[in-house]
Length: 328
Ligand SMILES: CC(C)(COP(=O)(O)OP(=O)(O)OC[C@H]1O[C@@H](n2cnc3c(N)ncnc32)[C@H](O)[C@@H]1OP(=O)(O)O)[C@@H](O)C(=O)NCCC(=O)NCCS
Image 1 (tube, rainbow, N blue to C red):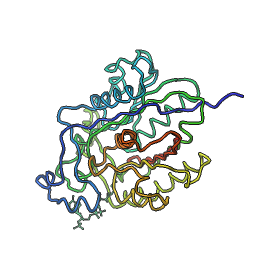
Image 2: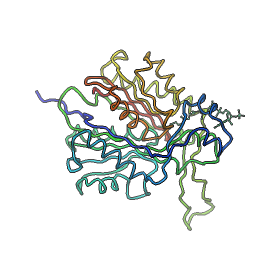
Image 3: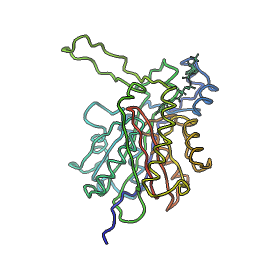
Image 4: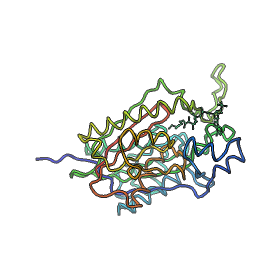
């Protein structure tokens, strides 16, 4: 009987810039306090890039993932990068990563844009290449450098984000381990909840169009409520489509936006503290970097064992949301 092809995660890696910005550091820039940030979000500090580019962070995370997978860049035939802070408008960050790592020229490399859901969208896409036989070994990366697009004068957003990257190597596998279910969704009707216009000037031909402030704009309160509801639904959807139940879940690796959002999902799923990966106290919200960074830390801390069932869930601008279930 033919075996079902699955994507197995055979290595993970991550990278965050060295420079740490504490809540007290932020209180010197905007009117805020450690107590406010900590109690509303759970964030104590975040990393900000001083000399790291999006490509540089992605490459460092990818190298660590390849090392963990005991593979070289030459073995990779697909590179997908989830990012909304690409190196340039074009070429894609994936093309830069492909060339810097030495992945074979001519292999497919492209970015996906899904904000904080970027890594899970990239994972979902790579999985489809692998299950159809179009790729055998894929490098899936989530990276964002939000320090470039936050308004450092807006205390309601600048305290939330940080820079970072994470990567996973997927291998086509015929066993029972690997990605069991993956679901991605978007609803553009909610775009104004959370967006960043970016530093693009209107062309000389556009009538009456003024350059907008490029920075992130967010309706935090509404986003919070929608994120909780949507992520709870997304987790249930992925678990049900994998044929498993909540009781089978070993570990939840959620997008790291807000401790209160994560706690609400944890309670809804009936999970214990040690079954939920949380590192936003040290990194803040690193957007597409968040899930693979949290996964890599959990793997390196020995929190992930062979056969464990891991659930991923993300929510972000777009609006976008996604969930996945992996048997490790
Ligand atoms: C941003 C967030 C932490 C704000 O928490 P909140 O409890 O909703 O707070 P509000 O936005 O209602 O603001 C409450 C008050 O705190 C103030 N405030 C906002 N940011 C502040 C800061 N950094 N320091 C101190 N006060 C702040 C506001 O001005 C407001 O004051 P007011 O009542 O006098 O108007 C929360 O809404 C959140 O996490 N939202 C989801 C964001 C998110 O996850 N986005 C990414 C999804 S991927």
